[in-house]
Amino acid sequence: MNSFKHQLLSVIAVFVSTVAMAQGPEWIKDAVLYQIYPSTYMDSDGNGIGDLPGITSRLDYIKKLGVTAIWLSPVYESGWMDGGYDVIDFYKVDPRFGTNTDMVTLASEAHKRGIKVCLDLVAGHTSDRNPWFLQSKEGSNLRYSDYFIWTDVITDEDKEQIKKRYEAPDPKASTIGKFVEANAPRAKYYQKNFYEAQPALNYGYANPDPSHPWEQSVDAPGPQAVRQEIRNIMSFWFSKGIDGFRVDLASSLVKNDDMNKTETSKLWKEMREWRDKNFPDRALIAEWFNPKQSLPAGFDIDFYQARSRSRDAAPVNLTSIGNNAQQTRPGMAFQQPKAYFDLAGEGSIKGFVDNFKDVYDSTRGIGYFSFPTGSHDAQRVSFAPRTSTEELKVLMTFFLTLPGIPTIYYGDEIGMKYLPGLPSKEGSNARSGSRTPMQWTAEESAGFSSCKPEDLYLPVDTENGRITVEAQENDPNSLLNYVRDLLKLRKGSEALGNDGEWEYVADVEQPYPMIYKRFTGKETYLVAINPSGKKVQATLGSMSDGAPLCAISSGKVSYKQTKKGDTVQLGACSAAVFKLQ
Image (cartoon, rainbow, N blue to C red; front, side, top):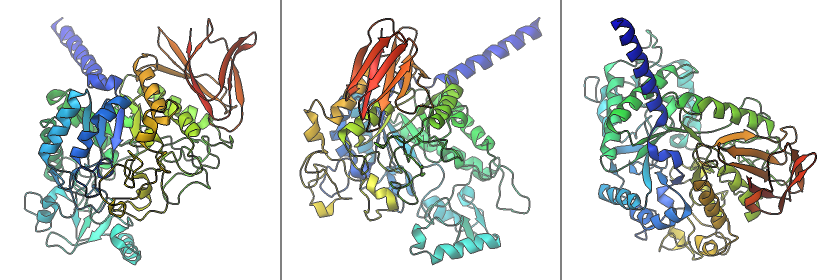
């Protein structure tokens, strides 16, 4: 009896633990994220580069938008070889942004407005100017010696990759190969993650090769010390009022891991247990792009990215949601033969629906995924020829009515454009066009800075003031106010919220319009989207007991009840959110 009782209590304990892990911090249940690239959001001191006091000065705007949490790209002291993702000191704000006290002030002022603040945790590597790395170069028996991966022996193929990198126009900005020749006292080579200036932190190898002595196990002292350092970094900033971390390249920490990311998942489960015990109200957000792996591994949120080996199977994804082969910039976006979000109306929808349903069904109750409007690494959704307010309203209807956590990339709410052809800035390469200063006013420097236009971090293009907060603030038909209205509707509806259920109800073989249902036991909404340049309609089964109300719409739309079923009509480039009664 005692044995049975013990077993029963153990089962209950496991169940309670699993439920607790699935819940996460209470505040993410209705969270709306807003990503800010700090160098280009708001400049408070007139040097042409954004800073933390500048962000603090715009918190009222962020609150009015309907955002509940901001995520800042890296603000730590950096060598600026990769937009802040080469960190010199994880415990110090870079002087370009201000001080640690400025960060505490930002968090405090944000909290007064009901806004959470999340930082970017660059967990996979440091700068080659980081003191840990500089010490590790000096020998094998120092404190930080095994924080990094050193070897005197690499393969001929790896040597060839090094040679190719140095034949590139700018070797330091090349990502070719995985080893760097350093000829340091510690060893001849170190492993990098991206650029030469980003030596990989050592989390160990999933299956160390005995003939490769540099391949330490995940349980070795060096990899274990690195894990502890990551906990120290999070603990330090949590104690300063920070509410969470978005973890850069979270799936790639353990080297030579299998396709299921078994060892990396174990690592993050340990981190999650530590978080739950010490900081249960803080969020862990993954850059994993696979919620089916990352959420069971302990993350609260991961970003959705519909990828497929078949070019036709995923017509909607993070970097190419509207880019066909002609629009795609070389080397950055995943090309599609026909874009779904294009006036041509020649895209498909089945691949996306199948993929999205799979992710949705597999992760409900475990955590949340987020389909962001864009990011610092991706082309903005407003990119010629798709820059009209009507087209962008259709896109925003899609992004902001999906289940999970909405994430808006700064400036997308006013339709800021991707600007092609800009020079690379601090390792941005083609990404420069998505990192331009926030456009507040019609002034030469767009109200971002008091500096001269030529001193801006990157150029702006307001289209004579049209694409600015100032121009759109009091225009009831503006994209900005449309986004605000969508977020207000979402906040007031359990069905449209992060936990509301989702079901695709249109015929996937008839791509236009896209129609899905958001619902709970109490209410139901129907979202209909037509990005094409022609009028479309779809006949559904009987969806409503009475005449539905159009909660919010863009363009000409109608919903009619007929003997054959409910018919939804949408004019060219239009979208609607219907409340069914």
